[in-house]
Length: 149
Image (cartoon, rainbow, N blue to C red):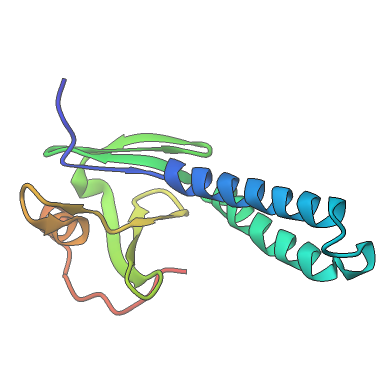
């Protein structure tokens, strides 16, 4: 079986969100049971709970769950998406800032209106990141300043 050069999965984000929700539920139950916080003062905990729940909700609406990039093709799967494509079918790759120390990628496939969001992975064996590798494979112009909405 052929090993992918890059492999992306959104499962770690779901797992960390589930751990955060579990910790929050424990904190609320502990606080209410031992009287640390009265029932009237739970507004802050409720707001924190809603903000914590937004993470997995947002992740569940993203179309991309996993992606594998091989030398000759890419495989995308997720919510109403299962597609194997050649690199010529990738219309555009844009690098975007996700947080202070992470960059993400927005990938647009030909014939599909959706924009696939994923992390910009790094392969330490070949010492290149996914964005640079895809730019070489898709023969796109590297500096793309227009952001995909």
